[in-house]
Length: 260
Ligand code: NAD
Image 1 (cartoon, protein in one colour):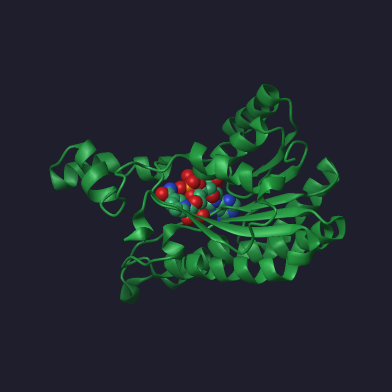
Image 2: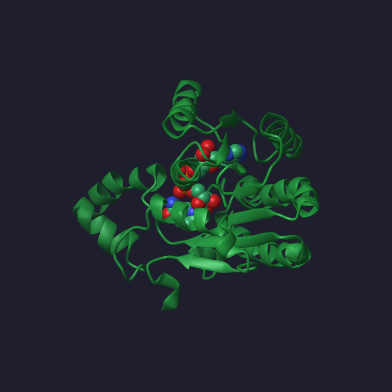
């Protein structure tokens, strides 16, 4: 049962992380939110999730580039909720540039947030999960964990890296009731992606629908965005007992993108 489990979801003030938080809360799980944003909006989200679903919802503003803040978030979650059963490593950023022009500080930030932060949450939570013989680690990778696109060197390297981390920790935890999996979404219409549509339409002289279909979804055979509800549903399933034998996997949720 996932009901009553305690989860940390990094980068859950927006987009996919927030969608997974909603699915977890609806499944009766307690959630520690994390991420940046307006303090008032985050508190409204936190209180709304707790009230609608009758679960505990906390917030910790740890910066995922800072190992000591990650450690504080893990310690506070264990103190507030009693223990940490589930970790969803979701926080992520992107930067698009040819390698010759790729800013070194953007490379470092992407590796820190999209990859190293997962190393830290896992190293800080796995021992207790193994001791209790139950745990779930879910890494939000990307279709870019399986295939590449030009100009996204740091992002693609980090996402391929997190699949290696997923497989390694799955083997280390396999006999202790802890599963470790990666979800590999295709394009999801998060605020980040949606904000680019009007400008792209203007720049190319095409409609917003054409931007979605012919630019963003060019590689996605369904021509439909993946939804945060679909990703939340899979994350809840991975927390169920029915998913106990699913470990070390990279699960594409990409409308057929990586089947090509
Ligand atoms: P988003 O920008 O909507 O959300 C990112 C979240 O990460 C926000 O809560 C933000 O505050 C948080 N964050 C950023 N930097 C942080 C830091 N230093 N410390 C703590 N939190 C930080 O993005 P999203 O589209 O929801 O992406 C979430 C994850 O899903 C990322 O790992 C991304 O790579 C992955 N993903 C997204 C898509 C997509 O199409 N949107 C596709 C595949 C994978």
